[in-house]
Length: 435
Image 1 (tube, helix red, strand yellow):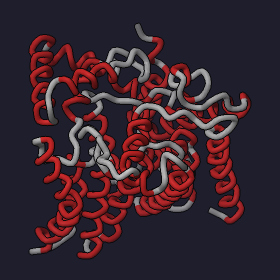
Image 2 (cartoon, one colour; image 1 turned 45 degrees about the vertical axis):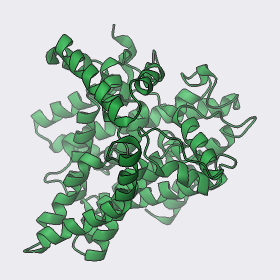
Image 3 (cartoon, rainbow, N blue to C red; image 1 turned 60 degrees about the vertical axis):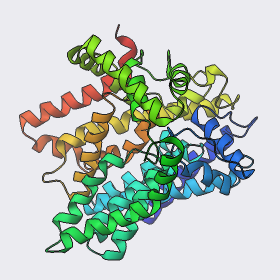
């Protein structure tokens, strides 16, 4: 990216983040919502020298970071750290796209949009661990791709992955996939030593938490929300998140179902087995396909839902009467960017030159992993944040000549591009049109 282009990109990113700061501060501070309240209350207890008081649906690290950064009394430190983490994630994504064979403008644009897409950028200003987790995930992939054969870097890889697990449980089942290149690129005894070094870092960070949770809750885990989210995901009623929600009601039932995590998980397993036996897998699968991906890829995001007129704002949370022009601008930018990125990613997944570079392979596998998870687990548009690097990386492969790539493709691939783009658009806007 040339100096003038870089200056324009930096200005646009700064403008987006400044608009988010202003909307979240004037005329009144934004009202925290959902898990933000849970994290803020836990951070307050930690700051007072008390136990966090979190159920094991939530990993323990984020409220401790909030307390260390002075939240919820002051959000400045949290915002600065998360904005820097988002910038770091953008630079990592830029390098990964470049290493995948798309240097220059495609890589620059992928990094820029990760920083400037309003729906993703907003999470640097929210009390959710999404941005910090995003940075750790991309840092882990970068270590695998760029430094995967060096012992100290592999230990650091384990520490990064351990920290990610202490923020969100998402990467647990995906860890073996991330370590496959570390094994394949090694020779001899290093094929065992390399993944062992990475696992050493993971164990060093997570084992004390697991032991404490085993003693307290009867479960040798960092956190475990799988059964709860599976039950809620099977029973969600709407194609849009935040509409006709059942999470709060089911959370109350979950807490009442046992004295600790082990008992509650056992109760959830029994309910899930009974549900599957009653409905049958074909009917369940059809129902899930009819709602889950509409919920994930809906055109609205947690940013637009918190602006006046959004589903969160309608409940009395989110942005408090921001200037109408600013609110309208953020909403239009968020929806337009979200749909544009989704369409570009759908086309890029089909048109990306084969074979894919290793970073794109790992990101594609991560997308498949998430799509598999969210076929059954409770899903919201918030979970699309973790997919932003995947969507941007594949969307960037269309540049700088999308027309030429489409013209050079076979008729079958052209038809696949059109079908993928139409499907993406339908998932973004079509949910409310269906019965």
